[in-house]
Amino acid sequence: MARILYTVCGVGLGHCMRSTPVIEELERQGHQILLSSYSIAFDFLKKKFESSKTIQLFDILEGSENDELLKIVMYEVPIEPKSLGKNFLKLLNNVKKFRPDIIISDFDLYSSIIGFLLDIPVILISNTHISEYYPISLDLKDKINYSLKDRAILYSFPRIDHMILLGFVKPKSLPKKVSFFFYPLREEITEVQVAEKNFFLAYFSEKELEKMLPLLKSFKQKKFVVFTRKKMRDTKNIRFKPLDKKEFAKDFAICKGVLSHGGITSISEALFLKKPVYLFVKKSFFERYYNSRLVAENNFGHAEYSPTANGLKHFFSNLKNYKKGIKKSGYAPENKKMAQEISRLIAEYSGKE
Image (cartoon, rainbow, N blue to C red; front, top):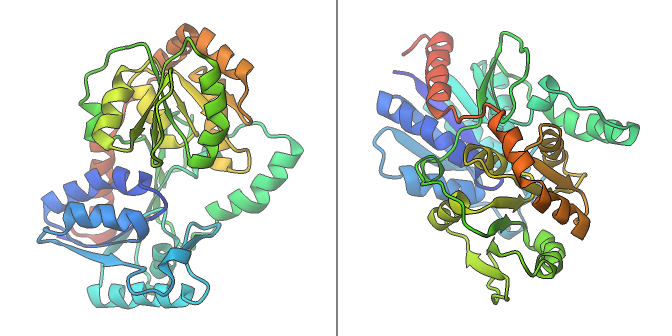
């Protein structure tokens, strides 16, 4: 069995949720794992794996000063101005003690640097890199912004021996050292009963929701279920619900369509459940802008960069058309295939099965 350093980007819960089935499979196989993350992702993983006999958990930010001031910079690296180096050295020292045969990084820069410094093979899990292999047309302004900022992120990882590329559309061709898989989904979504009732599900950040609410209220003949962290009072056509993954999955499966911010997880879930998608996306957030372009170009739904009544009206009137596009997508989550490929790569690069 191999000794594996498995690091997970702590921005949101998307990375840790997609890595969970992979970690579970590696645990089942008996590998020794040092599992590292930070922020809410670490809390999620700790709850899931703290009783494991083969998994050690390491919080990169444990004991750091000013946890409330956690910042996410362009690399999605957990930093505080005074403790960037300290956090990295903490992980490096723990890795040296653990002596891994291989590193699996779910879009975590620290571990790629460590692989480079200690000469340990690195398998990178990424959906962000798909823009390199499934390009979209960009105007000059967007092209400059993408090249200077977002493309720089893709090339900031100093060591990648093999990449697990995730997405909801499949690139036509890939290099030998890149393996593509349709985006993996959690069991709450894949095992839910699908139907269609007369309401739309909405999920946005608080700031995005502030812009969306007046528009949703103006469509008095439409009903909406809005999931939010903020406690809010129901209106005549909007019901607010607290975030709960089981309740969210249940309503997702029976809604007419989904209104969201363009994250890859919610888009993939919508495609799996055959739900048309309306996206309100900030163009400055390139990953979500890129996702929104793929959704529009493949006829999975409608995207706007400033929400309008006309845009929502267009979405509501084209649901049947979007369902046809979704039917042609070929999307199906590849949790098992992805885990099998990672197991194969572990054996190939570490020499241990």
